[in-house]
Image (cartoon, rainbow, N blue to C red; front, side, top):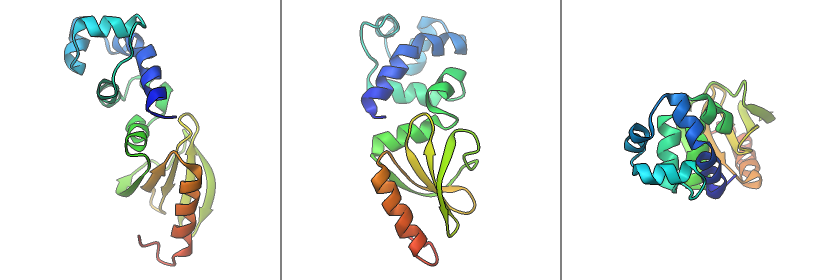
Length: 155
C-alpha cells in the first residue's frame, strides 16, 4: 500500500464516509477543508482527493466503519507509516494487534506483526508499545533482528 493506493481508496469511499457520519456535502466540505464543488467532483469519481485531504478524512473520521474497513482499527498508523516511509516509534501504546494483525515472529519480548489489510509491518515491545513501523518487509525484519539480538532492547 502506498500514497496512491490510499488516495484512491479514500476518494472512492468519500461519499460513504460522509453519509455514515451524517453530514451534508456543504458541512463535509467545510470540515475537510475543500470546496463543495471539489467534494462533489471527488464523490462522482471525476477527480481524486489530494494527500492532505485524505489525511484529514482518515484523522477526522477514523472511527467510522468505512475507514476502519479500509485500514483497520488504527488508520492513522497506516497513514503515518506511508507518509514517513517507515518510522521508529517510542512509547506509542497499542492494543497488541488482537484483530487486525498477524504475528510473524516473537523473540526476546518483541513481536513482529503484519497488518492484514494494509500489509504494513510493525514491531511491538513486551508491553505492546509500537516502536517501529514500515511498509518494507525486509526493513522490518532487519530491525526486528537488530532489536532481538540486543540483550536489553535499547535503541
